[in-house]
Image 1 (tube, rainbow, N blue to C red):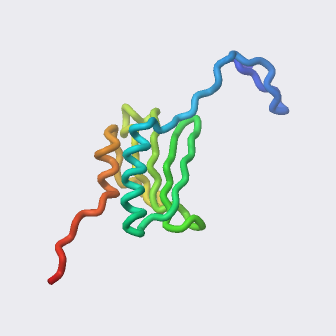
Image 2: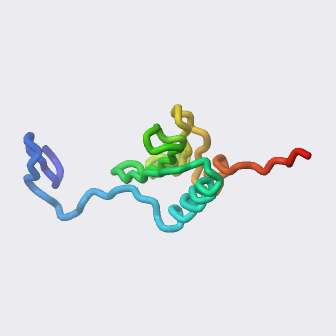
Image 3: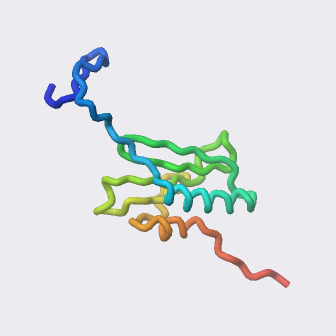
Length: 120
C-alpha cells in the first residue's frame, strides 16, 4: 500500500500521519440560513424534524414531515462540485435535484413558499 496512512486487511491502523481526514461541514452562517428556513416551516406546521449528516465528501441537512418517513428535502454541500454544478444542491424526496448553485441563499429560495392572494 502506498501513502502515509496504512490500514491492514483486518482494519487495524498500521501507520498514522498525524492528520485526520476532514469532514465536510456547514459553517455557522450556512447553518443559520438553513435553520432560519427550517424554523419558518416548522412554525407553519409543514416540517417537523431534521437530521444533519457530516461525511468525508458531503454534508447533508435532511428535512422530515414525520421522523419515521424519508426526508422531504435534503440540502447538500459537496465541495467537489463547487466548480462544476455548484457547491450546494436541494434534492427532493424522489431524488430530483430541484436547484444547484454556489450561493446558498439562491439555492434555498426553491424551498421558500410564495405568498398567495387571499380569496374574498
